[in-house]
Amino acid sequence: MIHIDPKSEPAEENRPDRIVITKANALYTTFGSSYCMERFFINRTDCWHKFTILHGRIHDKEFILKLIMDNVYPVELFPVMYKEEGEHTCFLAKRCGSAIEKLCRSRLVINTPSGLPVELEIILAFAHINDILVNVHESIIKVMNKRFNKSTKHLDLSNFHRDPDLRDLVFCPLSQATIFHHVLNAFKSNLPPVKSLNLSHNDICSLKSLEAMWQRQQPLVKVDLRHNMIKHVRDLEVLRQLQVTELLLDQNPLCQHFDSEYSYTSAVRGVLPSLVKLDGVVLGPPNVPRIKRNFVRPLEDTTLADQFVRHFFTLYDGDNRMKLGGMYHGDALFSLSSTYLPAQSTSSTARLTEYTIESRNLLKLSDYSKGFKLLRHGADAILPTICKLPRSEHDPYSFTVDLIHSVAFKIPKPSVGPKVAPGKGQKLSASDKEQMTKVLSHLTEMNVKWSRKCLEESKWNVKKALTMFTELYKISKIPPEAFSTM
Image 1 (cartoon, rainbow, N blue to C red):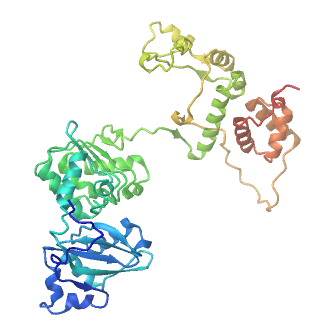
Image 2 (cartoon, helix red, strand yellow):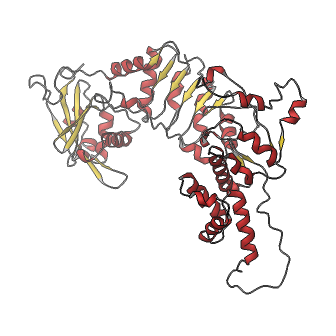
Image 3 (tube, rainbow, N blue to C red):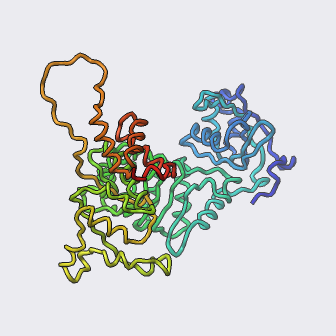
């Protein structure tokens, strides 16, 4: 509760004597006589001290307050009632003598990361604590009770310092270890044990404060640490005692230390052996690599695979699936598996019968001889099958793609021969160009004239020609005459 307008001055009769510390007398306050008046006022516990940030309006509130708190770390400082006063900004704090002395040692000047100095002034004993009644501890407990779900035993401390019931009263970022410790102690004393704890979006770099939970905390099921500043896997050691089984770590610096999901998972599991779920993925037995959503080898074929998939399903979802004829190898095999889930049907008129008839789900086939019939072999058998399936619209972001073998770009090892002086590349013969035109026409269903035109614009690079065709086809920029027979 606040009994006075924070913009007003304390009542004259209740206001203690004041001493102003500036850049000029800051060092004397710290290193002067132990009997000096400044020392006496700094250590008074019945007063609010006022901190003024000269020209503070040019700085973001969170930035400038974190800068000051980092400067006094590990000493505790709770900035209260931050506000603007003209071109300056200010806040109040109490029981902060050690923080004031630490600031005075640098003459009340703090350098920003850009090198710009920030200068402070401090009015000691600005107001008596009875004039401005602000209970930081009670405010924190109130917010924690609001964020605690009793039925699920989930405590949400995400973006804690930006909570509407805190941000205009007190600045208490959990990125400050002393404040993090204070908040967890408040939780320990006033809330029952939790099963799930959300600490995301707090810029936390140290978890040592969680040790405060060990004495009374039952095993935690889940901890959310996304969007913090945890730099090393060893920093997670503190969670071992809490027997965490599910952990979210996305968007932490430590994630950048690993070149594969397997090494990342193994490292985290080495610290937290009880873990069964990491970043939303259920972990398999130890020493087994995580399943990859897409697998393309060699990696340089990823672009080609992506282009092929996009081109294929652009044609498949189009008006005439017979255009896919050029996409299938003569010995291609095709089958599909379909399961009808009534609860997931999005339309009462959904035509799923054709999929059920063609489904080759070996776990549900009663007649295994039918499995051979449903395995289509070659383009002549595949195209009629897919043409009779209902019209569709595919979501490319839901695809899982495997390319485990590629021979299209294998080049035989050149035989040793005499060196040839460098010069211009060999020109394609008319026969080569004719063959390339036929290949592109076969793949795209365009006629020879337009296939040749596409290759000419791509400087006879088949890969570029396919890419250009796919992009233009998607936006309907290829005219109908490109597909007419001549």
